[in-house]
Image (cartoon, rainbow, N blue to C red):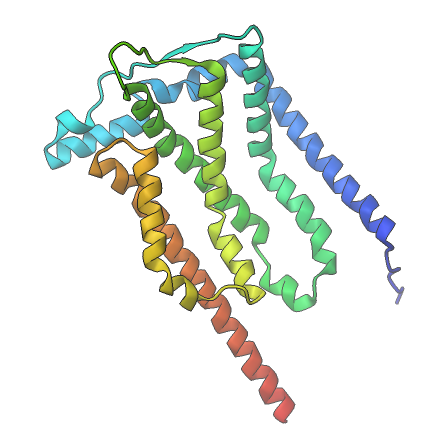
Length: 277
């Protein structure tokens, strides 16, 4: 049997460099495709959340009809006016949105590349317990991105476009501000939905326990309600719509932590039994 040659520090750096290069190539390919179809993407995706017939507003109107408050939840018009006040504004946002889409679409491949780099350094049992990591991270990321685009973005656009301190002030948004806000909400949601993954690894290394998360559940609920109140219009339905998924995400993270602790305790008992024999 051939003995695998131990890699030096420079060998690891060289391997990491190629993983990064391949990841960047994937981003570049998707970015170029997004740039080519930029006009379609802006019309049907980026600016779609400013239209009253966007799918989220249809859901809200159906909910309003169901509970008997259509005048509150049915939206007929969203007063959004977008301008480009800088000469390079539209071109810059075209590139920025293309890069974001390129990164988002290539995210599973990027995670897979870095997993390939990390995996050889793991122990056999660590590899076994980390099976499905790429799928889990990618699934949670796209779930968060969908939540940010289909729920948080239209709520934020509606609230900010209708918010007014005085009738003298006209809400006319710059294209840079608008696109940056949408990207921040969507990407931020994608990162926020990585909470179960973060909790999993923090529990594995002993920095977090389900007991700790249960103890500070009330604090987490307060933070979730504050976040929901900030990013939604001032009505209980919208705040509940945002707050419930975030709270369920926190509870799911507690469940993940508890499963990790249970498995670790089981392994410790098995090792003690083997040592006793």
